[in-house]
Image (cartoon, rainbow, N blue to C red):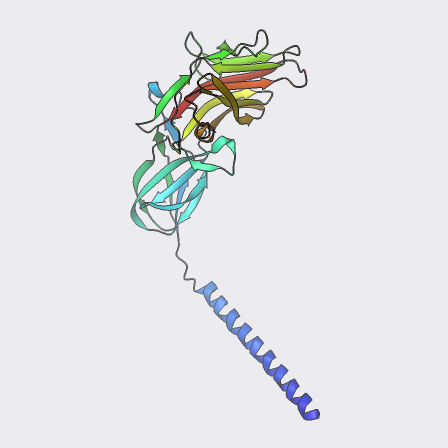
Length: 301
């Protein structure tokens, strides 16, 4: 029994020695890495923001570009929320491409390059431990189609009051120097008081839109003290269906969103044409509800 106990004790001692020996080796090599690093020293790229330039036929250059999708030599480096400084383990001359990214429907978890902006391209020279500052400028792609653009600058407005709306709830034009005008000379506005339940504005023209996977977006600037919805009326012969695309929350400052309409249009069955609508419901009978709109664009290829 004593011999067996002694044998077990020796085995345990051997295991302890092996463990501590292994641990010493790990610590040794770890310390070697600290004093003799093998990691490359990166170069850095800084992007503060991405600018959008538009032609007169493309409307306002107002945008909400939140991200940069960065490619070097056609290899994706990453998606970076702006402003951003990020490391790149590459040196020398390379081809840089940057795609302007948005939050689809304003949702942080739905980030994507905006399909209607062309990419920015530049030959760059990367040097380790050096920061390269890039200021990209993008434009709309040449084959983008605008079904309509409403900037409220002209005499007529393409958003008409729906028959379901209450009295005196038409979308009107606010003219500068009114503090609520977003840009230019005027913006659109709809108001509800405590005797009015509903505002609904509908495009006075219906549009034939592509079905399938082709992207369709509605761009708009907005400011509101109450939530409102954006949606689509789908027409098939004498039949009409109404579908909500997105609910937008109250925003005390002017905001910009990109409403993704492809699922609604593609899922509309045999519908042939579509109207865009905006709606605001006064559930609580509140006074002085306001919806302000500007730079509405229906965009697709």
